[in-house]
Image (cartoon, rainbow, N blue to C red):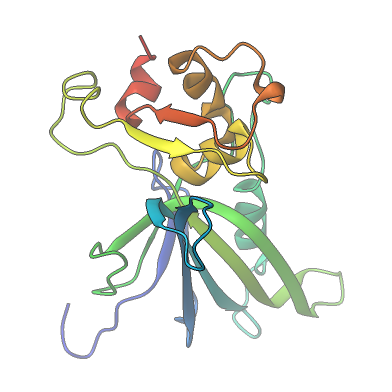
Length: 226
């Protein structure tokens, strides 16, 4: 890339990068949020001891401006809108663990969690169409979207080697369920089945706060917990 060129932000499917959205204009602001999770053990002291239980996924919020006013063409920005909406859709809800596709966000040298890519799911999408042609074709729109990071399998590892040693423990809080723990840990609520299997849980609706859970390694989700 020469000095006169600029890096364009891109959002693409992880497993099929031909399905992508190249931003017409780069974002002017990007915000990140990440929750740190603690477990406070009640006692008679004013400041009960705090135990770190993990960090939640990273959420990235940004605004995208699409504009094809005066640029000709018969499709306007409809293909870009259709692509974004498709990333919020589950292809086959009957399949176990099914969900929207994983996405990759990149923008030049921008680093998120020391990585130049953010792999995650489209959590929120708002499309505001601001200009149309006389036939109702959208030509300009502002897109507000939020991506939530998903767990990524470490590179160079065998799907089952070392998985047991990299398992983590999590203490169930009052407002949590297996589904919410699976979503916050792995970015996939369907992973609750793997957690239940690993912990010998037959009825997840009867879990009580304070229950300690053993969380499978991300590699075990694909290989199947044993």
